[in-house]
Length: 264
Image 1: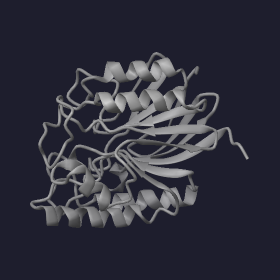
Image 2 (image 1 turned 90 degrees about the vertical axis):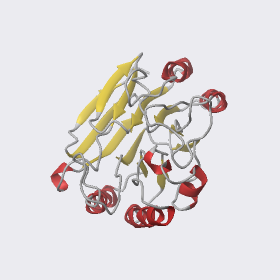
Image 3 (image 1 turned 135 degrees about the vertical axis):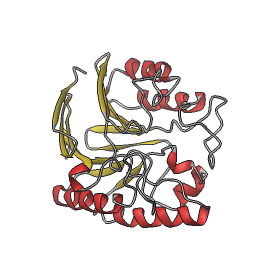
Image 4 (image 1 turned 30 degrees about the vertical axis):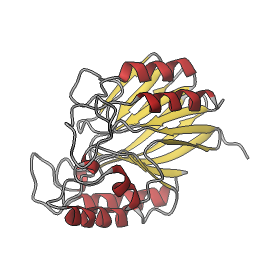
């Protein structure tokens, strides 16, 4: 039976590591924060959950970082439903993309899927300017691109569906000039706008959080789980989206409730 609304559990930038606090990042506390987040998600019973990248932080060795990923993945895997993953730059500080995906529930670096009346797209902006993959730290975090092959795939994918669409990505698609932005974001935004069906893009990476609306598409950046001590500094959301373009974000911790409206 078709539904005109969808519910999503969402968080970003857990950066879990067994490490002392640095620059207000409480790495160890992300375990408790994600535990609380998943408890709320299981109570709300969303259609799926998604983490928007940087699930782990860099370890001193591959073996140590595999331990970090295993530990935080066990918390995320407590969600009693379908889980999705966006690749973040910190996830690839020690891992290759294949290593990261093989050791968690990620189904691909970029892909799409349908739920009810909606279409969802997971993008991967973890590429260098020469279109090579981020791989075990061979990149600078301020340089992120969506390569031409992925753009061609995205264009074909968007035109293959008539459903209202929501996009997920780690780096920001609304701020190509800032340090957290995707450098070729205007090219990608043009594809989203031309399709005429994209309601919103949900992002991480910029730990402060943000919201912009560009040509009737919302770009919402979730604040980071890892920033700040205590559960009151947590940040996650239950997001409810209707086919008329209205979006309700139920925020937890430092993330406040918001209502968005798209005219698409």
